[in-house]
Image (cartoon, rainbow over all chains, first blue to last red; front, top):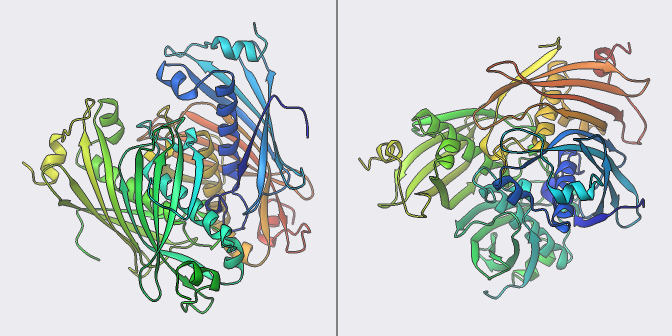
Length: 134
Length: 134
Length: 134
Length: 134
C-alpha cells in the first residue's frame, strides 16, 4: 500500500452491489467522498459546517481507474493523500484496497476548488495548510 | 435502549443527507437492510451466498416510524430483534438510536419470507432456529 | 388501477437493481418520494423552495407492502392519492404498477407533517387545500 | 450541443441532491450509466441479458469534468458518443446539458471492456459494430 495521510476502513453493503454481483461503479465515488470528508474532519474541517457558512468545496474533476471489483462481504480501506494542482485547485489522490489481500481496487484523483458565497475561490486556512499553500 | 439480539454502529455519510440537511428517508432502509444482513452473517447466513443458491429472502412489508432525523456527523446504532409473524413470515424489529444521547431515531418492523428457486417458501435452517421455528 | 389524483411513469435503471436482480427495496421509497414531489409541483408546491423558506415537509411514517419485484427493463407508474389522517398529519396513498400488465408492485401509505423554522406545525395553504383542510 | 448518436432526457430527483442543494457528484455516474445502458438497448444489447449470459461489460476508467451543478427541478439531457480506444477497450464520450439553456454540466469519458465468463475479453457483435471494429 502506498503512503497516505489518512485512511478509512469500511464494509461493502449488499445494497451497494448491482446485477453483476459487484459494487456498482458510482458507489466508489460515495466511498471516496466519505473518506475525503472524514479526512477533512481529521484536520478540523467539517464539510456540513463549511456549507452552512457559505463555503462550498466542489469537485471539478474525477479520474477513476477501476482495477478490480469489490463484492458482497469484502472489507476495504480508502487511502487519502493531498496533492497541490494549481494556485486554486487541490487534488486528492485516493486508492481503495481490499483488506483481505491488499489488492488494489480503485485508483482515483479527485480535483477540487473551494468557493465562497459570492462564487469566488476562497480556501479555508486549514485546507490551505493541508495542501502546503501556507 | 430496548433489548436486541444484534446491533451495528455506523456513521452518517454526507452523501446520504439531502437538501433538508438530514438523512434522506430512503437511506434508513439501507441502514436497516445492512444491519439485517450483518445479523444474518452473525448466525452464519450469508445473503449473497443464499441468493446464489436460489434462496431469496424477500421483504414483503416494512413499517417505518421516523421519530427524529439524523444529521451529518451523527453516529448511530441499529438494533435488530426477531419476531415470529406466522408460519411462513418472519419479522425484524429494528430501532435506530443516535449514539451521543440514545435518542430514538427510527422504529421499524420489517417482515420477510424466504423463497426457493421454484418460488416456494423455504426457510434456511439457521433462520428457522433464529425465529424459534425449530 | 385504482383512482389517483396524480401519476408518474418511470423506467427501472440498472443501478437500482441489486444482487437478486430486482429493484432494491429502499429504491421504491425514492420512486415514491419523487412522485410525491412531482405531485406537489403539480399543485404549485416546490419542495426545494419550501425547504429554503424554512418549511420542512417531513415523513413521520411509511407503510410499504412489497407485492412483486420490478426488474431491469421494467417501466412502471406511481399513482398518488391524498388522505387526511388527523388535524396535523396528512397521508399519501401510493401504489406502483408495472406498465406492461398493470401488475401491482408496491402499495404504500406515507404519512407526513409540515413544520416551520420554529419546529411548529405549519401547513402551506396549497397543501391544506389539497387535503381538504380548507 | 455536440454531435451524439444517442441522447436521453431526465429530471433531477430531489433525493439525488445533497446538503449543498445540488446533485451529488456520484449521481452523475448513475445518469451516465443509465444513458449508456439505454443506448446499448437502442442497438439491441440488453445489459441485464448480457450479464445473465456471462458477458460482463465493465468500466475500467472514468474521467469526469464537473462544469456546473444541476439543482432540484432541473431537466437535463445526457448525450452518448462511442470512441474506439484500443483493440480491446471502447470509450463512451458523454456530456450532460441542462435543458433550459443547453448549459454544459458534465463532460465525461467512460472506458470499458467486455469480458466473458472465463474472464477473457469478448466483444458482443452489436458492440463491435457500434464501435466500428467490424
